[in-house]
Length: 185
Image (cartoon, rainbow, N blue to C red; front, side):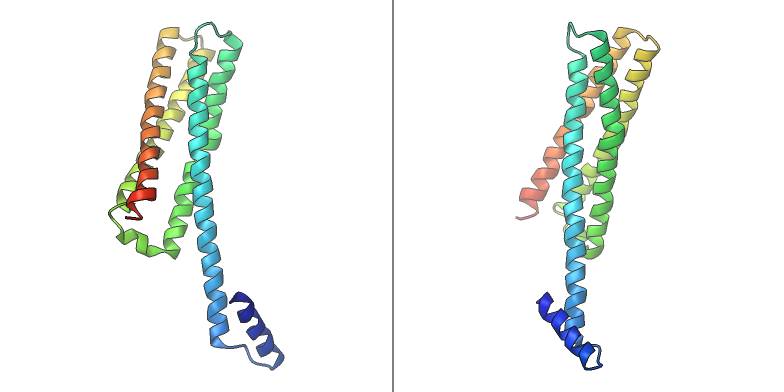
């Protein structure tokens, strides 16, 4: 269809006319569809990046809490977890949010599908809040370690970090169920 539209425009240009209206509409439609698919692709990739980064930083914090781990390794795990939250997880969820908004611009009908869309957006908002709480907590763990803070306080923060991660994991599963099963019902 797209090739036919381009051919029609070329023929029209050869004959001094702008091409058929149908050809122009097809080209406009194909660009719109391409932008919509690009927004959806970015949305899915950034959500996958968010989930992967969340899993990785949770594992690092859990590994840093293991008994018998060397102090330099423990400190490196904690710093890496804080870096992953700050430089991968949060940008990924913001990219997912903005690409989702871009997708809605091209497909506003999703706004009317309250059975799955509004709960999904609520979960995304809660994930955004949890990611920020994880970031603040991970940075405080690193700062407390550098300042020579009490191990009991740091252990408490690590436990809190695990709770944030568990809640985030549940929200990710809820989003996947909403998108996979409720949306198609």
